[in-house]
Image 1 (cartoon, helix red, strand yellow):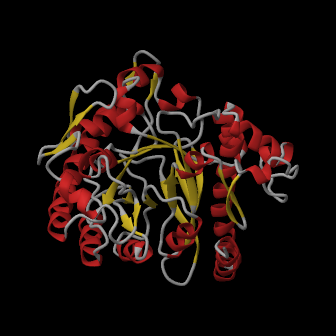
Image 2 (cartoon, one colour; image 1 turned 90 degrees about the vertical axis):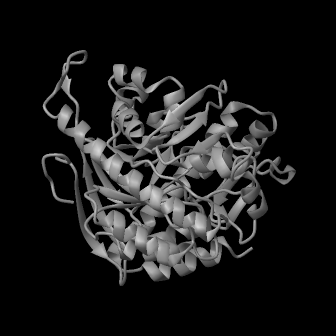
Length: 417
C-alpha cells in the first residue's frame, strides 16, 4: 500500500511468499505494526467478554475488532468520539478495526431466526431464508440503505453507506469497512447478483464519504482533546456468495476502486469456502491487505492463508469457551463433561497460556459447571491464545518454508477424531 495524503501512516509490505497466493507481511498502522497472517480478536461491544485489554495483549493478540452496529446503539458513537475514540475508550493501544454493520443485514435480515451463519452446510436453512426474504426480519434493505429495528428497544434506525462511514469515523478505529450487503450462502443466484451489485454501489458511496471525511479532518485539531485525529483506512468488501464468477466480478470491481484493503465477506458453504476465497484474492491487488470476515476454524486458517488471506476475525473462540468447548491440538473437548472433574492436568500440557500454566481441567470444569465467571474467562484466554498462536505458527512456517508440512501434520492431528 503506497502512502499518500489520505492513508499516511499505513503501509503493507510483503516479506515472504508461498507458491501461489499465500504470503507473510507487515502491515503498518498509526497504532503499530501487524505481523500477518494474524488473527483479529473480536470485542463486539468494545470488550471481549470477561477479559481486559491487558489480557488480550499478554496472550499475544495484535489487533482488536469492534462492531459498528452495536456501538451505535450503545453507548453511541458520539460518546465514543467524545472519549477520544475507541482506543482511549477501551484502553487498547494497538491497531483496531470496526466492521460496517453489514453483517447485521444478514443476521437481522433474511437469516433472522434461522440457523444460517457464516459457514453453512449445503442445504441448511435454505427454506428458512426463502421464507424470511420479505417477512419476519427486523432489517429491511432498500437501494439507499438498511432500516434496522433496535435489538434493545425496537426503535427504528436507518443505515446508509454514508452514515456507516460517519459512525466509524467517530469510533476512530485504524481500519474500517465499507457498508455492504452480506448474503447467505443459501440465497438464490439471482439475489446474489442483485445484492452484489448493491454492495458495489454502496462501496463507491462509502469510498466517496470516507474520502470526504478524511480530507475534512486532515490537520484539523480536536478542540476538546487538543490533538490531530490520526488517519483511518477503508476496506472494501467482496461479496458474491459461493459463486466463483461472482466472486471474481466483485473482486475485480472493488479492486479497481481506491480502497486501502479488502474484506471478503458473506456466508460460505463449508465445502468450497477455500476455493471461493482463492478466486477473490487472485483478482484483488497484491499490494493491499485482505481480511476474511468471521472465520475462526483451524482448518480455515490454513485454507485462507494459502489462498491469500492476511487477517481473520471470529467470535467463535470466546463464544465456544463460555459453553465449555476448548481447543487442543487433538481437537475440541467439552471441559464441562464429568470426566474432567478429577482431571488435575492443564487443558493442554504444552500450552503457554495463563490458564494452562496456572489451573487444571478439574478447576475450570468446576467453575463452568457452577457458572462462575472465572471459568469463562480462563477458557476464553486459552482459546484465544490457541488461535492467535496457531496463526502465528502458520506465519512462521511461511518464513521457514515448512507451510505444507505443518498444515498436513496439524490438520491430521486436530481432526483425527
